[in-house]
Amino acid sequence: MRALLRDRNLLLVLGAGMISQLGDWALVLGLPLFVYGRTHSIALSGALVTVDLLPRLFAGPIAGVLADRWNRKFALIGADLFRAGVLLALLITAAGGPIWLVYVVAVLEGSASQLFVAAEGALLPNIVRGENLLRANSLMSVGNSTIRLVGPPLGGLLFALLGLTASAIVDSASFAVSASLLLAVRLPAAARQVSEPESGAARGMVSAFVRELADGARCLLTSRVFEALCVVLAAVMVAQGILETLLVPFVIDVLHYDATEFGILAAAQGLGGLLGALALSALSRHVTSGRVVGAALVLGGTFLVGFLVARPLAISAAMLFLVGVPMVVASAWVETYYQQKISNELLGRVLGLTGTVTSVGFLVGVVAASLFGSRLGIVPVMLAAAAVLLATGVFAVAALWTARTTEPETATATSDVAAAAK
Image (cartoon, rainbow, N blue to C red):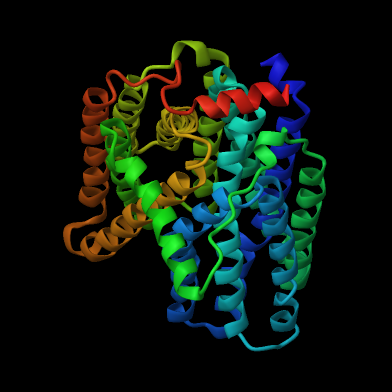
């Protein structure tokens, strides 16, 4: 881990991601509050959630193809600069302009974010040796979890004190700072090469795009482990969609907690994610087997059941804390496996496609919770989410029994590129 902390390229990418995420929290909380405060419309507030989900469903595969075609460093910088510019359009709405501009900005910013996610995930094997990828991903998780702890209160305070104008400016500035950090990243020559699309008419360009996307899908469908991971990710996100939809009603209507107590529960879950990332970074050499994913999901489902049946605040917070620990471990393992086993030329497309898979799973969970939460009751539906995690964990233990995040099979090119970077 000390060697990774001295890796200049990794620290630049980590710092860029943390700064842009911290700025994002200025709008994640502020934008829904602004829309509802100005319109007093539940429908328009709900539409903002839907619009935010659309890029995850449709832009992921496109972003994956572009991340494989373009120089990934400049794809990251371009995505940051684009988002920095687009967010400034919110100043028009904040000054009394049309409310529909918020939705346009949300779609454009979310689409650029999909490119950033795909390019960042595909870039990491270019700057980190294969044997250090799991630790690098755990370090990235540490950064993400830290921002999730400090970002919400800071973002909420900024919006409460200064309004949408300040939130938009801060978020835009965070992307500009992120881009400046990424500009200092040094890539090896092999990683700077780009895959140019075929020249010709628009029809030829479309067919080339479809063919490239099909290559990424074929990569996922020609491996039983990759297929199993898609099933696992989709099922986990179904459970996640249920939980995120019903957590607030559960806390208010079942536990009868107020906003302060809800904040304690959210902080406990964030601390669990941070601890899980720290533990993984320390124990990465001992969690190379795919069975760790199944075990983590079983533990997550078990602790979720504990949260649903617990009533004292201390026990509820402890259960949510314990839910967060194994889920981060499972997520980092899956990310590392893709980075090690998939060739560098296809990695962006595969990450983009898996992002779409997880988004579809999340949407299914949200719809299921919305349809059945009031009919069957909040607790039974959330228990069903816990059952999904438990069943998925058992499936993952069997399906990923032989999978390892060591001894790369197909992604030998990525380790060569990382070695050249050193």
